[in-house]
Length: 109
Length: 109
View 1: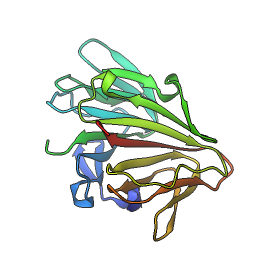
View 2: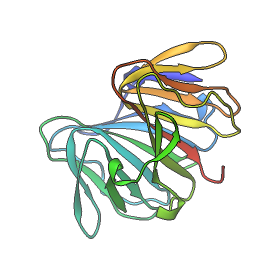
View 3: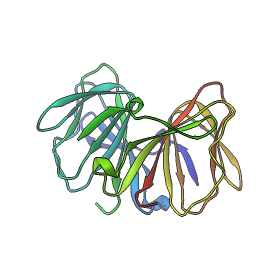
View 4: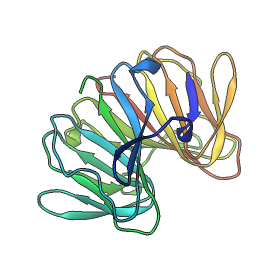
């Protein structure tokens, strides 16, 4: 097994105010899906986009909204979000501290 | 998309002092893998076992150890654990508060 603190993984900047850490990947031997940890700074947002793969998310800290075509839904620590394939979405930090969440996707995307 | 607090999902008791919530499942439309949230009470442990599927885990709160055949490794909030297929493991709470973690597995297990 591999045990680490998520901060042991070097972050990459996805866009201004948004970093991503690939904390479990195929390089670890993961056969099916991978885990990333995102940090979104106050006032910032992940891209509003869609893709053919799903997201499975749990919020670790902070607060914000998850945006779809229909609505904005509040999110905070312990919120679980399932985004099916091909659904427009983004995660926006509307709080005062870092919005942190883990987001899993299938391998091969 | 589906947005919920993990506590909105009814827990099932896995064994004494261990509950599981299936927070994202095939019933939500998840095509590849599913998310569960476990709570382990102080002094309790998940089964020491092995299976052909992997675990992708992040610790949400509490502290304990993850046990393999070789060693015990401390875990706490923000620890990431990848357990490959066919590796013996258990999660033990050696702290004073609930050990809570999310654990993802492939569908069809």
